[in-house]
Image 1 (tube, rainbow, N blue to C red):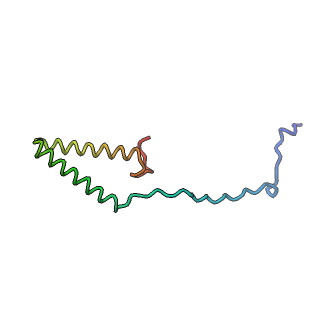
Image 2 (spheres, one colour; image 1 turned 45 degrees about the vertical axis):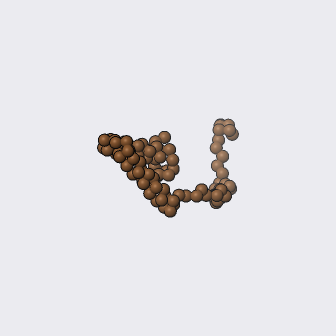
Image 3 (tube, rainbow, N blue to C red; image 1 turned 120 degrees about the vertical axis):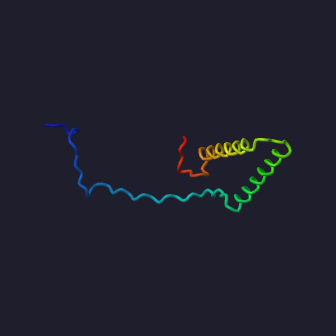
Length: 101
């Protein structure tokens, strides 16, 4: 004969406790952060672009810089590095597609 400890007790389905339904998810009470809209982004973009153009004019004409291809390459390299850093370390650009840890 087996011990009572070794035997499994079968409980009829009618006697099992019912699993309570899941509670609704509570709504966050924290205020949402203000989002940057096109009304802010576009003027900032125009100002920054104009600043780069004026600075390039200063470099070419006042400082007599003779290598425009180097300056454009430097600008594009900086833009790519900035994009990669922004993509990797912020949620501004595709926060759900994080390729970097």
